[in-house]
Image (cartoon, rainbow, N blue to C red; front, top):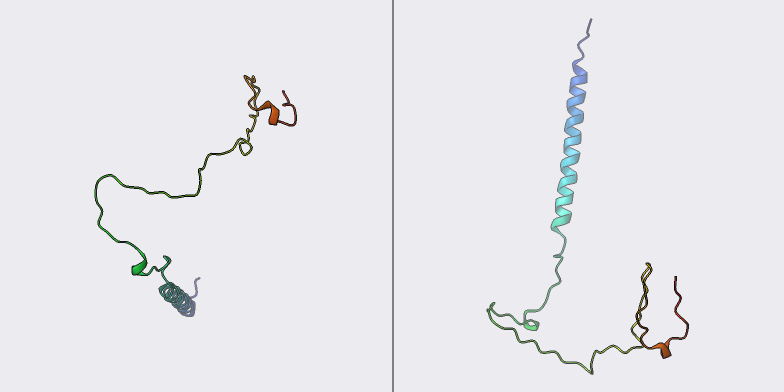
Length: 103
């Protein structure tokens, strides 16, 4: 025979209300924390940027630099492949200090 225990129903209801209130307080704290964050994008003074409307047409690009950007042969490295191959020619043999190894 089942015994009616209304206090268990009240305890369960009270526990649900407490957990709901704790969850609501946590959500409110998260919302307030996010609301206080500064914007992610850095701020820029309006006087330091150029603003204009978007236009269709050719774009003029001016580039200034000191010298040319042509790589010298000392800076270029050739990395061998991990597979077997046939050497057709060796460029700049005099600058190499060790003989190439073949597999």
